[in-house]
Image (cartoon, rainbow, N blue to C red):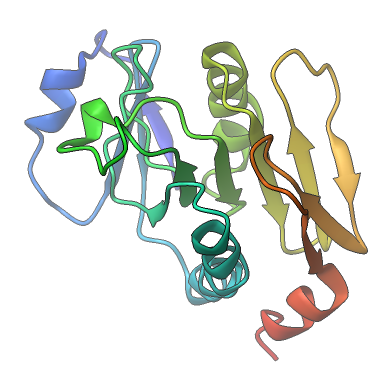
Length: 187
């Protein structure tokens, strides 16, 4: 189960120095978040979302669609490992390291029992605060996606189709959620 380690106030450097032990370490406002490796259904959902997003991101030259582990800094001294994220190019090219990546235009987290509180509250507040344009929280059990934007007090809820259109894209990406959830149902 993902649990915060609140014995001390952590720094980005201290978290990066932790051993590679199969746990996923993140840092939000000095709090160390520790999560186990994701389950099969979680990974299947991410693979399907990647298949939906990647052609769109490439076709519209939006930047890079990547996945964790990533050690994103968000220009804030934090360390987050979003499940999937889209970041714009840096000076027309790829960033040389994670701390150069900047603020993603899209962050996607698929809920797991061990991460739901962090994804819905702790990380959501951080993503909104630093200006992530769009944050999707994918709830496989409820078969819906929460869509958050900076300053929003409540998410927009998608349960039939998921629509995303970054400012620089001439047309939206539309994901049929009935089809998506059926593919990742695990049955």
